[in-house]
Image (tube, rainbow, N blue to C red; front, side):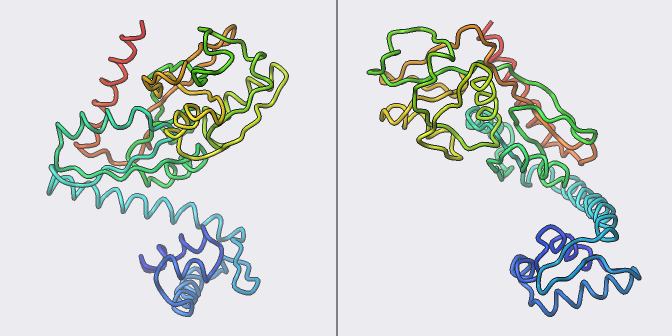
Length: 295
């Protein structure tokens, strides 16, 4: 059994399509098919049910996938540990976010301490983040809501109130607070389903008898303030994402604990480099300072 066979198997297992997997791996379909066939011959069982170029993991494949992912995960951790030992001042920190409003300040502070460490940051839905964590593809995640799993370490770093943002000329702009029920006829701008804040406010609105009507649903939370200012709709915006703008008024929500929990997450078995440990320290210090400001 060869390492290349395992790597190819993981891609095919995730995509379940020979053509797409070959494109992803930058190899020919015939080469990919032969590699998978050799792996099946080595194992003595078929790993897929085949229907044309589409593949479906069978019971043997599903069982073997868990072992293959674990084996490649450990090899990748060993590679990262050696890289850290040989060159601790360099490297790449892999991050994933469901909430990015605090990220620029955190990265700015970390870069002061580790100027030669590069970043790779992804904005993901909660489910996408869970997948990345289980695969060990990221060093840390900043997530709202928190994610609980046996192999994931979850540390709550901030309880963040969610506010209602309205344009200056809005009927509620002279208020300091509003009840959820008063918003049932409003048009909203927001992120797509699957993001923690969206799912949370939708469920609370449903509990008081209405479903928010969205005129815009995107995957860039930072754009919501611009859309509110342009009077496209109102928005639920966490307090840490609030911007100081004269054309936007932020209202507290009455009679509801409308807050999001922000958590720092990491895989319990993933190797944590010295740079990653320092990043975690920066995150904890940053949110501790924010918590003191709101007391």
